[in-house]
Length: 189
Image (cartoon, rainbow, N blue to C red; front, side, top):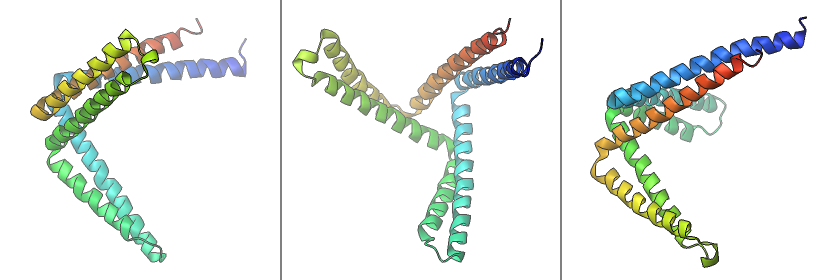
């Protein structure tokens, strides 16, 4: 016998299954693209960020003109829009440079975070430290320094490393979504 609740659950099951499945397939494909072509992926990502910044800057500039018509403060909003447009154009023109600089900063901040985490673990009160806390603290510091040196000495490889890490993460996420979608589909069976 069919009831409105059962019909709703069945519809959600079918649509949810498809949504999760397609999202999972897309994530796996993006992951493969990142693994196969890290620089191509970084270039496309740079162009997307650049276009987004140009569009967002245009919206900010348009908003500033509306604010000006209303005799409201508008100068900083116009400045924001112009800076975003110029930065977006620069990123569109030099997307690989954007990717290299971004990768440098991401790995640099990750390295700093690892070193600070290690220092914090080693500076914990003696009664709260164990052998593992000391080992992990030292390992964080050593790996943070190595990562920092790597980020400084080999910035082009940073793009490849980050693209591969993102690719593996996207593929794992996609596979998990595909598995969940199959489980959602089989809920009613």
